[in-house]
Amino acid sequence: CSQNTNAHGDQWNDEDLSLWSRDQVPPSGAHPLDPYAGGRALEAAIRPYARKVCGVPSYMAFELASRTFTLAFTSDPNIDPGLPTEVFVPLYQYPHGVEVEASDGHFEYRKQAQVLLYWPATSGATSGATSGATSSQAQSGGAAGRGVGGHLWADHMLRIRDPRLTQAV
Image 1 (cartoon, helix red, strand yellow):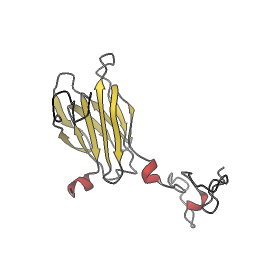
Image 2 (tube, helix red, strand yellow):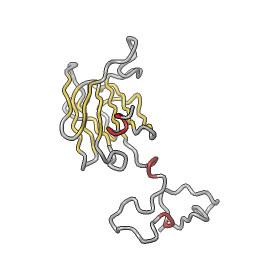
Image 3 (spheres, rainbow, N blue to C red):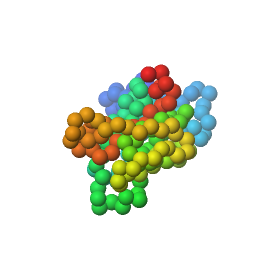
């Protein structure tokens, strides 16, 4: 059990780098099933990430202010093209769904499972989104040899955004 407190940090050198603190639990208590009770800096810690990539990632980033996740990768010909790339898409960051931009292929957003499955095209074919997401297809970026979305050595690009924030842009 953590002995972390706001007054004395982690009980070691007065720094407070823990993601959980008993002092952060609301005074009235928290629902026993609330996974966020006592959490600290959760906006920065709970973020999307590629948990399985059917290739070699060349770029992965999450911009907290815009809630934009970007993944660029090159396919691996030794991986079965029927297998999807999987991205963890936390409801904590995207409670209102997602807007997805893909360079090619198709994807499926499973909100309750907090996952986006992406099957890049093997022959350049593209298709739209399936259940629960807004879709658009990305344009290839810039000069020849730059890959998609301006990322070097990338065949495929996937971008996930909060639909409420993209409407304001």
